[in-house]
Length: 60
Image: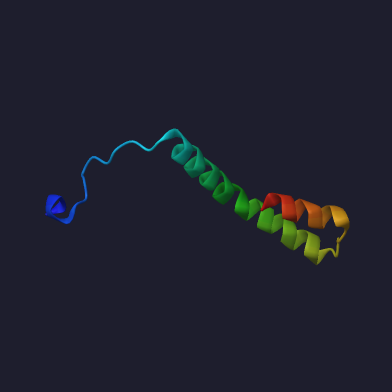
């Protein structure tokens, strides 16, 4: 059935740039929860400065 729909059971290996993009995406997902927790703590203790805004902008 998979052959009829065009999906291969053994997909070709991704090129180097695509593997790098996939690793970067996974890295972002791993760091998103700790970053969100840090932002919430900063918001709770009312810490706002140009540095906190710059840090948030650089993260994304």
